[in-house]
Image: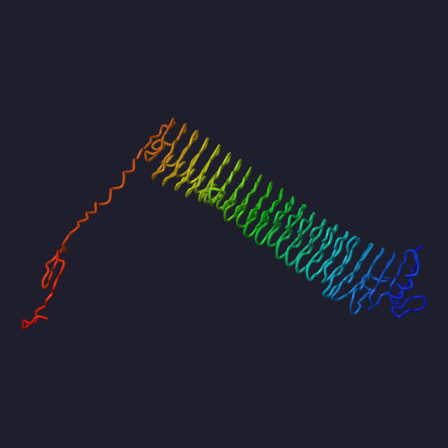
Length: 569
């Protein structure tokens, strides 16, 4: 049977004048104790031991416990607090040393301290409560948090550390100066929570943490909405993020799974994988990211599938010796490049669709920079669909490119391999410039305004089994010192057009065309005029010389000048 004690501020008959006196009276009794507290202000520190319930007899917040200093509630045993407001300064407001603690409809304010410190091997359950200014700390403890509010924490609003384990549901975090929730070397599950206004990442998992974030809404944060770092793991699913610096980030060996999330209006990146981070990102959407929608850098290596990118600046960027695999990627309405691979990085793209972007795929870097595209559609890329630059190597298979300045281009010293691709309605089909290498098999180019295939400088062409239909005045143009071979290719077009115009450095093997071929040998440049060098053993004069004395071929010379009066000097 529960023993009941009543506390009233003025201590009428049958009640206790303060909470401490009621607890002291209950301390000598066995079994559960219930202390009911009348509304009022109680400037005291509470030490609770055993199986005790502290409950306000009025509305939640009608009982305020506010000592001048020290811990407000020191608990051990099986303690429940219901409807109280606990206010403390410069220390732990609630300190759970042992056992279990339940805070129900409790308000805790920590001015310069910690709202709740749940120590190792304890368990705390928080429901419908509010925590303001200080953090809630689970250090090796377990916990459950439901329908709580965390406001204006001076650092992290809630931290789970030292192998702690906490489940959070339907709670709200606003205005934390550091993180809303930090999980370090511990486990946590967040479901249906709202986070906003944090100074750093709204949710952070570090130091091999395991974290699940499901159906959460995160807005207006200064850094990442969700950050996985320090080899942490976890799942992020069904979340909505807006106005964050980065939507989700995986760094330093972390390997999260991110599914069915939407990242809108991120100030820098939507998905950010850096510093050897990993991660699997499935069926996500990035809308209007200001810098890069999916950014992989400094050795990152994610797998991304089913991602839709709309608006913003750059779609996918893999840079600085990173790598990635991207499947079923849709990119549309970008003022810049849809897919970018640079600086020794490698990327594999499968089943991509790019529409209404300035450029489709762009690569730039040394020979370690590689990109493969298998199965894709590039529509209305203003400048071009695929461009390989530097010494990069690009392979394109089963891709259709439609409308733009140029379909595929290789510049500088890059290598471009094209297999089973189709180019239509372009200004030019394929262009090779510089010391590039172009391999093409079963390429179809239809209806470009200019050449279907053009090369210049010292590019090398190896094109076989390809078709050039209804091209401009010239279907294939080989200029400069470029060369190579065309094998089993066909050219069709209007009468009067030209099948091939070349410099005599390209072999045409089994060319099928009724159009004419023009071979224009480049004349070797005229040699520079010969320079004649004459060696003279005497001075050479090109004009009249007067009043001069000249001596040559002598080993000893005496010079004498005669003045006007005939005297030597």
